[in-house]
Image 1 (cartoon, rainbow, N blue to C red):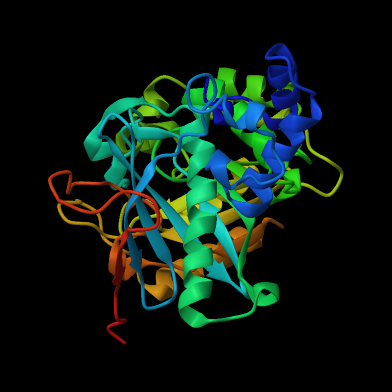
Image 2 (tube, rainbow, N blue to C red):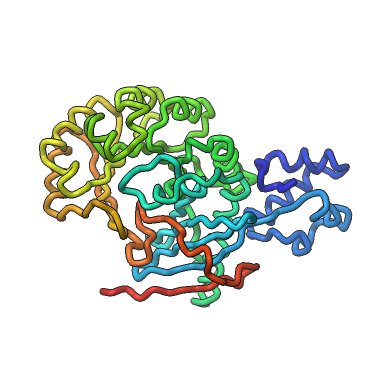
Length: 371
């Protein structure tokens, strides 16, 4: 049994089943989530009888880091190898001395959004909870390595204080792993993050949005809308052929929110496709009744894409038009563009590279900014 596939509040019960006090589970969780130590031999306050459970009965197996690429703006992209040879990507985004971690939930993606490079991979498989939680542990280890390189003090070591499920895959298509992972991240025995600092982004699966709401996780919801009408949405997001916008909005309407919380509607701006003032007005009318905010994302180009990035003037005009409908409008700053880590660019296509993958011996590839 890989304990990382279980929520940390259940580890004590698992240890009890094996004849040990339940507090041993909390001790192990403290090593894993506070110190990022997953080798039981390094857990010095555990007796031999608990150490002997590993690895014959229990494990804390992690994926392996293949590469870490650093962009000129400080963004870090992690290529993470899984036990079956598949590779996923995670992104660490710097922000005022802290980091946001962008997590993947699937190998590839089956939704098929035409503006997303991950869609070109198709869906390979869902990730296990241990592979999702493992991304956070490995990213924390990378930051520790960064600390060692810069020789900063432990008190100033950058930390991950926000999580966004916006990496490879459709999170709600893997609720069986998403929900326990979120609980591991937000439980006091786990990473201890505030649920308000965890955001799940979806292309719009109404039945799964309802199930996520019923799980009562207290997290934030973001919906990738990207079109103001069903006809256009069906062209650029095939999921629109299954679920019309109105059905998706009905599910969002009933998503549990605290008084000051809002659903975020993400809108990828594609030059000449969905960025006209008329389309901004249509989007404003559609979202005006909602307790929401709109995050505009200028398209991040990748090889072979039929789309292009709109001009700053077009983005500004679109945003100002939306604001007339009393919506909160933000424009997402593009990060990690020079290493293919920006929104919609994640896709691992270098499976044949020979790279060290064990322990801390990952390949570090700094990328110098072209500016």
